[in-house]
Image 1 (cartoon, one colour):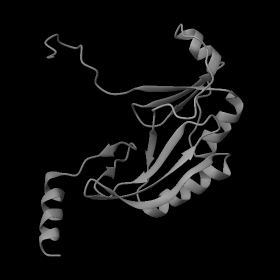
Image 2: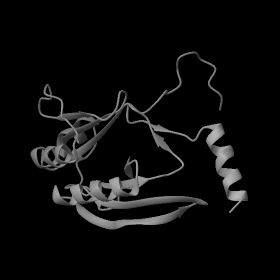
Image 3: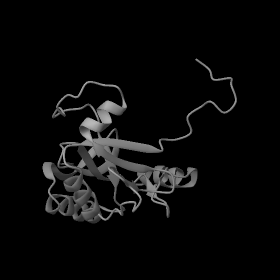
Image 4: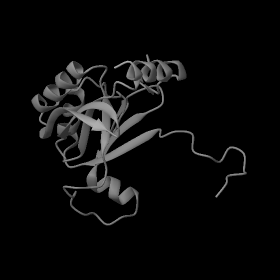
Length: 167
């Protein structure tokens, strides 16, 4: 399906809103990760994660009503994985420990993994509502000054392939 209408394609995810059981507990968890909440939130909470991405927290029941959906308990497995990336394996370990200290639950301690032929280092933490967060380091990606993930440049890819040939 092609999009031929100008200005109708989605450009990026701008807001991710999580329905939470206890807003105060969830706000404290995310603030402990180092994210600053918006002072103008009323009955909800927003964290500016980068220049174009907001994490919103809204009471679970209120969010369901806003979406005209039946209120159901939050399932353990939602089919949703959220992720934050660190600039190194050491930063992943520090963020993982910080999340646990803030009330998160370990789902998997960070370990080195093979991500389809690329090295990766990650672990999983459940927030106070059971939403799963991957805390990861992907050497093939860079983190920009505005906290966005940046893909490997063409030059970096060429250099990596050359390095592999000589190993």
